[in-house]
Amino acid sequence: MQGSGLVRQQSSVDGQMRAAVGRRTLVGGGFPSGEVMAVAPTRENALDHVVVMMFENRSFDNLLGRLYEPGEVDAFDGVAGKDLANPIPGWADDGPERGSVHYDVATSMNTPSLDPGEEYPHVNTQLFNVLDKPGQSAFGPPYNAPPAGTRPTMDGFVADYISTWWASTGRQPFFQEYRQIMAGYTPEQMPVISSLAKGFATFDHWFCDVPSQTFTNRSFFHAASASGQVVNMGDGSDFVGDNTAETLFDRLDAAGLDWRVYC
Image (cartoon, rainbow, N blue to C red; front, top):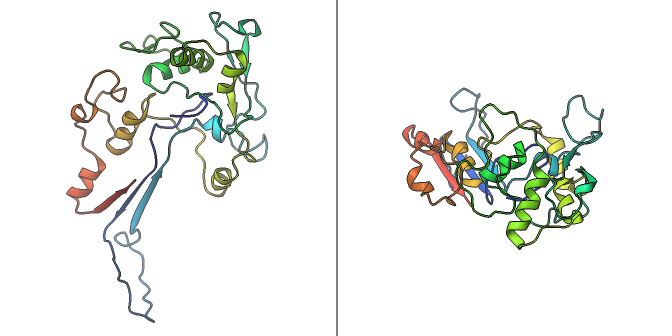
């Protein structure tokens, strides 16, 4: 998973996947040459295929947070015009006297240069600013989880990025290195995806099912459950073997509907 954490996080899905679902598949067929047939749409024939394309995730604020300026559209909850910041933890080696890191525009297409933490413990830190031990690379229950009923403060992205950098490289990052976790792109920097977002639709309040990485959220997308799993397999569990949830593909098979997955 790549991308700044800032405020909203999309579901974790690795790579690209296209799932085509339909009642029938026509191969090398169709109507005879020169013949056109108009068919009145009904509940049975109004939709032939559903195509879902899933990409690697990024947080909304990192990628599309500046899609519109304030007042440009009636309703858009982005980052422009807001004073957004995360505190710098007191245990940081560089820059704690600065107090906080404010949202800024990314200066590189590789921002952030080191992947932020994506597993359940890291996301708990990002959302609740709860960190059992800075700089550790191995996690177990309770996975930096806050007490039950705690509301997310969304102010632990800087703390988690410093801790993740420390665990990954053996040293703490300098201020200029960890400040990039609070950066995002402009439409001018991301012209293609920004044009698509403006031309179609954008969800500015869409959240992943599990505040964690790929497998759990992929499972929720296809099965509405991850059988209680919160990480891929880093805790020694067998994600595939332990996940017994029925998938939408099982339902499609039972209904006699065709489906395909393209990777």
